Amino acid sequence: MIEKIDNRNFLKTWIGFIIAAVVAFIGSAVVLWVDFYARVSTLLSNASASGATGHHGEDGEYIFNNLAFTTTDKVIIGIVIALVVALAVTYWVFMIESIIKQTRKDGTNTRLFGWLTGFFNILAVAGYFIYRCTLIKCPACGKLQPRKSTIYCRYCGAAIAKECKGCGTRMKLDENFCHNCGKASL
Image 1: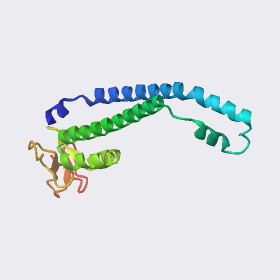
Image 2: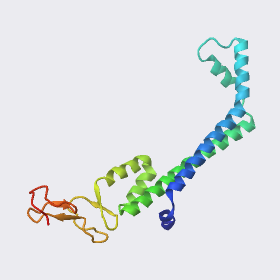
Image 3: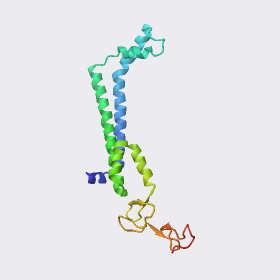
Image 4: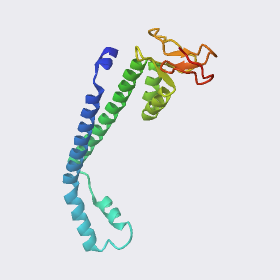
């Protein structure tokens, strides 16, 4: 299963999901409008003709009390609710799979962020990307490491940073002079 997640193109997956959700939303809105519009407009005109209007909220109360749901209405509403639930579950699973793929790529704690995404969804994903900002990326393998005290990658052994020969301050690989003592780091 992890191999399937690692090989999945999530850009295409999310685009397909968004298109399916938009089509489902528009289709549901059209079906509900076609099913209920004629009856609601008839009830509104009857309410106006019978004098039920005039007080705030009486139109809605009249419609609600006189709108009887047929079996077809109940089936249509049930299908729309099932569609919304299916889209919500699919969204949740895609979010978890997306964070699993990203954490595996970054070399961070996949289980922790997978579970957090399962429970807190978009908040956990936002938290993960904030957490990523506190890490440094290995130039050789691309895995993330803690910024402080990391000189060599714990996954491939490549140099991530260097120490100043004068004062021992940690420096980026591309820095030529120490930002602490000003000495050349050659």
